[in-house]
Structures are given as structure tokens and as C-alpha cells.
Length: 377
Image (tube, rainbow, N blue to C red; front, side, top):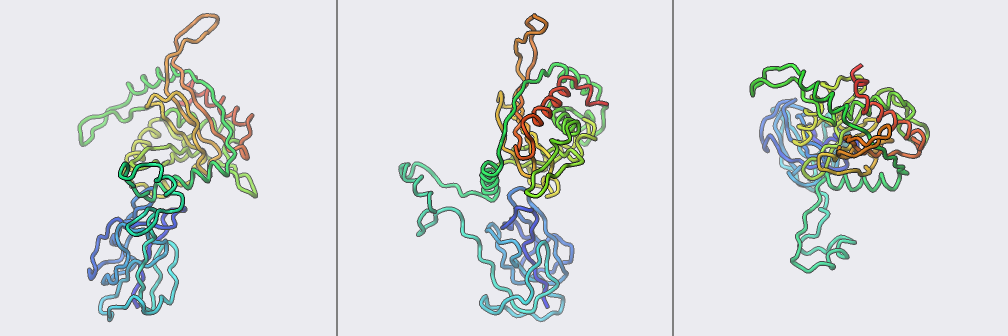
């Protein structure tokens, strides 16, 4: 019997996916383990291997259309196995597809996959409910409709879910950066040189954000009750500080995670973050590289944003929004001094992190930022 090839679930939030590219054509001979097709999810592009060796037949999964998770997209016939073209209306599969992989085999014919209707008006069809109310406010021909891709749909759904189900509570304070900036300059100057394909380069180049990640992780370890996730039956107390970092990519954003960030050196965090950000922008992250985490950092300081409040990304109970460092006139011991100051805002899930606990966490973060040598020991 032919082996069924299904659209696997590669992301915990994934309900549908799109095949962005087939690597084998109808009638081609494939080997088990060969890359068969590429799935485009809302966050990444994943290569899917052939579950068996044989001849690829009945390729019903079309490129560029939404396909439900678990739906059959093709069948692989063993060498020498009889094949006859199947009518789309003939029979059903005797075994339901299993989530995340192909079944061991099927006894009857495949039926074609019906693509999920697009969330946009098309010729001969009225606009979706609510959309017409928006469009009638604008002159016909003064706009164009750009269909939402999977990423934008997921971002919209998760943001609405987060803001309607999580009671957000916000805390803001200012951190002086001068000591951190000085230490960063010294550490970068002391970086050893290594040979690369492009010539010699420093082994690392620390950014302020790398040091923010480290400080946030160490603050969570110093205030362990804030390193938590809320569930209806219990509080999840995390043993490690895994820090997600918001990365802007075309069409949206993604949050790759620095695991055990409290235990890693600044140079390791810096190089790991550069690699994750690069692969995030090309949608080459693996699900385990952006799922989970115990907190997150979102930094808009490079755009000159003074301060903002970020939306919590479940299962996190906190997220730190980082603004730009600016020179301020501050009073110290009765004298006016110039200091570089950065504003940060901590958003907390009030079910898991109360106001006083959130304040304790933010004060621990501030202490590390203003006394950065503590991140080196």
C-alpha cells in the first residue's frame, strides 16, 4: 500500500500551513529522508523529509495555499507497486493521518486537499463581515488590498488573546548607562581576533542589548518568584532564565530564545543572538528556538524611542521594553551632572507577578545595569 504524506504540525500554534516549494515532482523517485517539500509557517520555513522510498504520486498539496495540519498532500508508492490514477471522489483513507508525520500506509485512494478560503474578497464574492464597513469609508480605487499572510494572522490573534486574557501591569524606571557603556567599550577592545572567510575579525562585538539580556536573566535568578508562568491550576516556577528577544522580520516579528542566559557569558550571548537574528530574518529557525522561554526583551532604542510598553507573550509573565539611551542632566550630591539614561518598562502578568514583586525584579535589573561588573562574575 502507498505511504501517505501529510502536512505535519511543526509549531504548537499551527492549524494550517503552506507548501512554499516542492523538491520533487509528480512521478519522481524519492528516498526516505530526502527533503520532499518546504513548509512556510507564520514564523519559519521548515524542510520536510520523505517518510518512505518510492515513486511520488497524487501530489494534491499545492504550493502557496493554506492546507490543514494532518491533511494528505501526496502518496509514495514502493518500487514495483501497482499504481492507478484515482478519481477524487473515490473512497477515503483507511487510517487517519497522525500529527507530525506520515502513517505507515493507507488502503484506499487519496482525496484532494481543499485549500482554506483566503481572508480577502475575490471576484464574485462579497467582502468578509466587517471589512465592508471599513472599505466604504474610502473612495473606490484609492487603496489596494494586501491579503494577510500566516504570520500576520497569528500575530493579530495572539496579541488580541494576550491583551484580553492577561491583566497587564506596568512599571517604569530609569537606568544610568555610563558604567555599562564604558565596560562594553573595554570588553570589545579586548576581544581576541579570529580568522574568518572575510578576513580577521573580533571574536565578539557586544551590544547594549546583549548586556540587557544578561541583566534580565540574572535579575530573574535574583528574584526567582518572578521567573514564573501562570496556569489555571498552578504557578509554573522556572529553574532557568530563558530570555526571548523580539526580532523584527519582514511582515512581522519573532522572538528567538537565549536559553539559560543567566549562565552564559556576554560573548556567548552576543554571538548566539547574532546567529538567531540572522536565521530569524531568513525564516530558518527551528520551532524549539522560538517556542517557550520565561521572559522577553523588546528593544526599540535604536529607533530613538524613549519608552513604550510591550505586550506579554504567553507563557511569559513578564516582558521588558527598552528605550533609547539619552544624555540627561541629573542631580548627584547636590550637583548637576550629565548622565546617559535609559528608560525601561516592565509589563507583568498580574496573576503571576504582583506589583511589589515586579518592582523588586526591575530594581534588581537596574542594579546590574548600573553596576555591570556584576555580570562578569
